[in-house]
Length: 67
Image 1 (cartoon, rainbow, N blue to C red):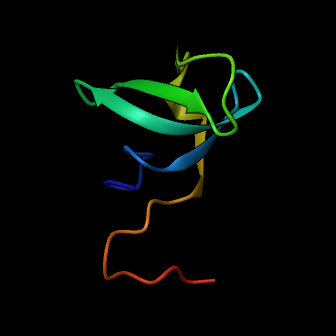
Image 2: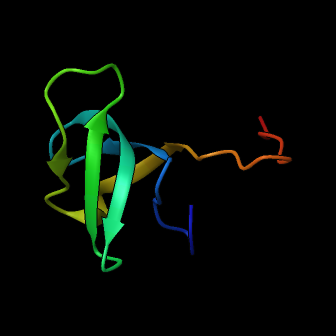
Image 3: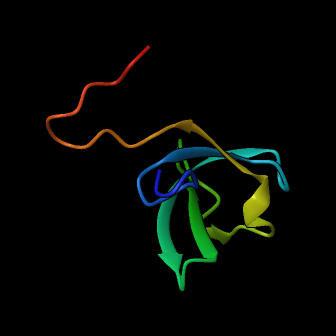
């Protein structure tokens, strides 16, 4: 996450399409490119970035995931 929003590498739920995805790119800070977690279906652009909910943030090297 970056500034409380989804960022590259985060696993998200796209509320606009009801799909789970990985953020693969963020263009100009507002356009989110997503790919399915389990493959198939190809990449898509999030219709509404406000409807992206981070379900698993990317863990940076040296960080520990808190559960």
